[in-house]
Image 1: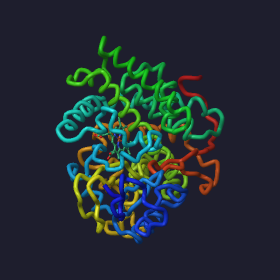
Image 2 (image 1 turned 90 degrees about the horizontal axis):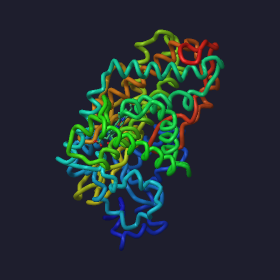
Image 3 (image 1 turned 60 degrees about the horizontal axis):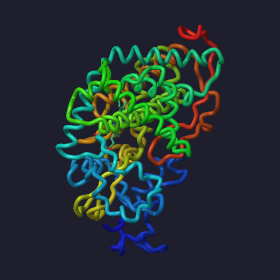
Image 4 (image 1 turned 45 degrees about the vertical axis):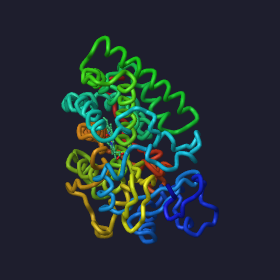
Length: 425
Ligand code: HEM
């Protein structure tokens, strides 16, 4: 395997500093991914076309697919652009502590890393378990959790919605969907969020979350209940370890994107005049804001990864067998080939890649669960705090420093203090 735009390197050593072929590669890091991603992707398209050579942390080479059609091509050919990271040609130069290793580590036996027929069977287990979630019951459950969270801050007249609401609601709702005890919810939500923050405490948090998942699987093996864990066990064909890994994938894949969908949609509604006028009772505008966010500020802006299984031309670039290909979801959504600059895709156009596409797309029942939780969270908040408004100027809102996710660090709001409704009265 060779690096993008780069001659073969002996033993996989990194390209020499100053090498002219590598000089054009864009480092996939830095503040512009937070501050002005659309402009950055436009420049990358201008300089490289629909597929750009990039480097990840540690000068690790990869390709970023910026074009809509090219991204569709990658998603649609899972044999050529393979999910199995054992095809990656860079493993021998990747240190054990490479920060992005968890995102490509195939040693976890989960639905994420299987391919072909094995994946079809595995995803059937996950989809069946999630498909059986009753949408009315989920809506009721999400309403109850939302009310409970709002009760903790509604009397104060101000709060920070990312920490106290948007990140907690999906964690608590998904914990319930999977079957963990309700009492474990807050501790698990904390562990999941600490793990995803990538801080030094992440490992301990991950261990706490895993220990609880083993307890859940063992409890449901002994006594099944009406939850996703029990349905996955009942599906048959998979062992304790595999079910634990897939439950972890469900929670980890579902939590942060749903939280950011809530946060990004609320931000849009609180800052854009088109939505401000209809905040109260504006059910229709919630739908429009959520759909617009999937195009403009998709929770996953770049997604890791696929691995080329043979040499191929893509977007005018020569991709070699073993190269890593990153899906540039946000960039594809602004591709001028499919969208006039400044043109809007709101109003029911669902042809975005916010949930991926193809074999490894977000499972349809998972998408519905995420949407129900996010929509319920936004609607309950607006019902309970109808005059909610930003407590800082829009320009003071800060996006998290992530190349992968698109979400706010904080969403401070104020509102007329309201009485607690059910739980803390
Ligand atoms: C609501 C916001 C959500 C967004 C934007 C989102 C986005 C995505 C994307 C882009 C992928 C594909 C990754 C790839 O191509 O490799 C994916 C996969 C996945 N998502 Fe979601 N997701 C969301 C919610 C959820 C929820 C709520 C769940 C669980 C209940 C979930 C479970 C999964 C699973 C299990 C996969 C892996 C599928 C596979 O590899 O076969 N997601 N998601």
